[in-house]
Amino acid sequence: MADTGTVKSQDTPFEGGPMDGRVLPVLVGPTGNPPKTYRIPVPDAAGGPPTVLVYRRVPRGHSKRLGLPQGWKYAFDPEGRRGGGPKWPWSKPPGRQAG
Image (cartoon, rainbow, N blue to C red; front, side, top):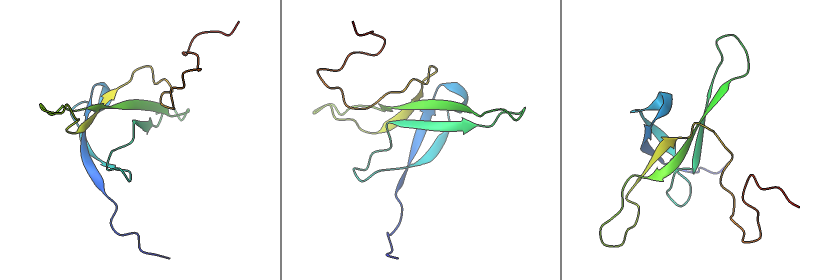
């Protein structure tokens, strides 16, 4: 098996929800960015299905000259809706019915 080297991670802050104020190491992808959504399963005390906390990646700040993101943080998404995916021009916005 080939050695893949070290796995890169980035300390990323969390805002809102139960993880507010915490900083966790998050694995980064080949582009050097953390994933767009971060899901944290929280086990149920009664033994039921786990609750999933959803956090969305947002820019931490922008550079003055070019307006590029200078880092990332995660913001709590209380609805936990499915997001992401390509935005095709022919796609209908979520919530609209055909017909």
